[in-house]
Image 1 (tube, rainbow, N blue to C red):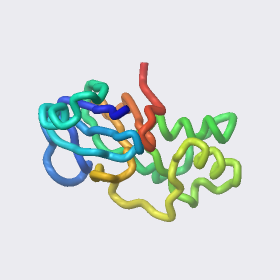
Image 2: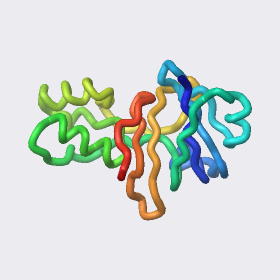
Image 3: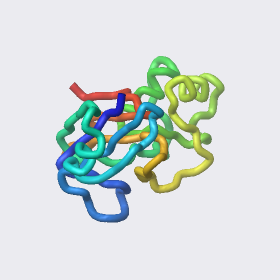
Length: 150
């Protein structure tokens, strides 16, 4: 089933372009971005999709560019990154086989270096929602909701 993620503001990139007011991103069954636009446009194109409305600003998930937070297990360390709104880490910080395996199991990407994240049609559905103080409200990794602040 397709899912529409909607927010008062959607950004396709954090450092480029203006926001889409009352925006939305649809995630298809293939965990790819199906479309980005206003909620009205997306809802019209995908009338049967379920809708998740988020407070805050919806945009591309981040790349965690520093050391992976400490936690008791590799899985918990990777989950700590997801809670920050990131779905990718730099390989120099995923420096053990256990961390790389935990990242792979959760679809967190290990990258050689960072590039500005962006939401692209047909691209992997990696999204994050942040409130006004920059706290991550939700993280979608490869189309799956993997973190939601309660």
